[in-house]
Length: 298
Ligand SMILES: C[S@@+](CC[C@H](N)C(=O)[O-])C[C@H]1O[C@@H](n2cnc3c(N)ncnc32)[C@H](O)[C@@H]1O
Image (cartoon, rainbow, N blue to C red; front, side):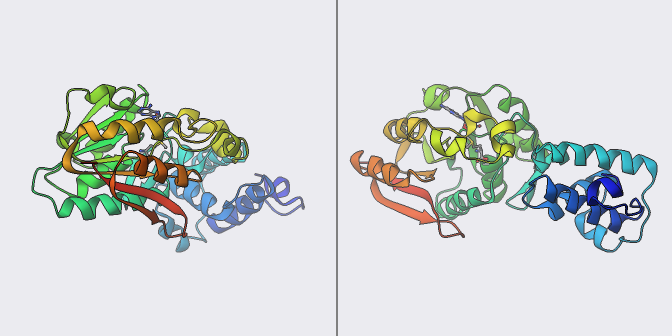
């Protein structure tokens, strides 16, 4: 990230904050990074203990050696295509900061639709509703919904032991730990005794097809947990079982909401084949089919 190395010209090395941003942006762009400017800002803000907004008013500020060292290490990692959110250690979701590292999938903005639908559904329920979040990862869904519905009781599960080391930290950080229980198990194995007890079941399961996975960016394929992403050849291996087994765990007027990808048609058909009522397909802000919802079969 020296001036000459980054630009290919014999420019003077950067000294001021604004110069570091400009040089890094060009350097990362050359490495194939999709959003080089934003990533440079996120890393520099973290290295300096500032917000991104602070950066805009400090372009003329010189960087000291320690700061340059910290920033340079981050830029080096990003040039190796490590996701920027693992490098800075957090990701904003539902306007909350979630701690993330290689143990968990980085929460995606499109998953906020699941949170929005859940909050709308739960606001119309009696107090003390119970939510099950299957495949909780960083805890993004469970923690966000619990932070909105303040008397909600949540059970959040995952197959991965390392996920369950990190997710409770996010619950703690957002003051909802006393209302979220975390359990390990394959789908409903962790909640086998909780029949007919949940008002709402939410899941963002692994749904990427094997073929789609091979075409994903190196940030995803080389760094994020594959088990969080891939749902077999057709993307249905986890969600299919989930739709089939869910009715036993929901109250008679309970609802299931699952995030979907390109296999959305098959998920809708699975709901319909299982007798789910009022099956609906919701689109995200980009207009993509993103969530399938249904009321428990009679
Ligand atoms: C797409 S990630 C979702 C993470 C988080 N809920 C989110 O939306 O950011 C899927 C999660 O499901 C977990 N998982 C995969 N297969 C599972 C299974 N059979 N039972 C329970 N959890 C599973 C993975 O470990 C991963 O944490």
